[in-house]
Length: 189
Ligand code: AMP
Image (cartoon, rainbow, N blue to C red):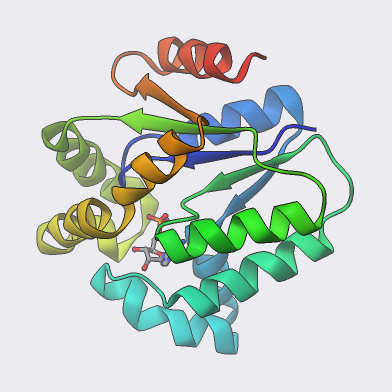
């Protein structure tokens, strides 16, 4: 079993690369953004609670996200491992994830940081807006806000996981398959 976190700003390719890894290795994908969007679509209380944050590019409060991940972990059968995508995004979330996984006896092995320059993120998100149907991709101001939120709230996790010796930096630019090969190398798979 291999559990790892995909760290990286919005538009860095976490979702795209997760899809390839899932197809090849059967990991379970826990993408908090995808889960919130699905909850919103189904009109659940959780979706309604998250809506304002998603629309404005702000982070959903830690306790809501942590509770949700805990439920998803409990509900998931034994498997090849989990990809945490878009989670954790704050130090509080990272500490909670460490505790949850320790309790389950299946610690995080790696953190893959996809590094992409901001100018490319803006281009990718604007392009993605044409097909994603995501209002937070379609609005340049919200894109800027999400990049800033990443820098302010999530950037400190680079040191957090660096200090744990788990951080692998991967250049997230170039052809999708090239990036995928770099990721597999960093995960030793
Ligand atoms: P994403 O699909 O990862 O870009 O996430 C879309 C939005 O969902 C974010 O802008 C946040 O509003 C919310 N979100 C996703 N993951 C988290 C998280 N781990 N903590 C707080 N908010 C989150």
